[in-house]
Image (cartoon, rainbow, N blue to C red; front, side, top):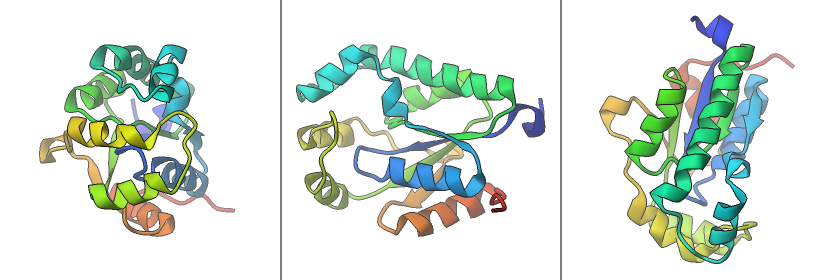
Length: 176
């Protein structure tokens, strides 16, 4: 199927505090595409674990990744384009997402642990305490060249990061 029939799907990935939501929302707005916050697709049991400061396991993440895949497939079926956030910390998670939607484009917001720690410490997240950040960096497997992910420096402004994504993926900004 062509992109015209299936739409385009972009997953913005990175550790908590890398700016996924801010960047993905702005990207979707500039493109005139749908936006979905991937954290909203977590099963209630995962949310409860994170609220308690308990890091999720691969078993915990499996139903969440499946829901993300279902969302991405539904966009293709409807011919919609969209941007979705997902930490997608491991290669296996990204492969699972790609198995649901092979044409998905992955954007990795890369930031140093010091940068991200400063951001996480300065904000309040509904259920992702700062205490879990170390476990995210321990779990992170950065995308390799064979994954063809777009890597963007998470240290810039959201506007700069979105412009870099649009240029790297050769996307067209929506007209007002």
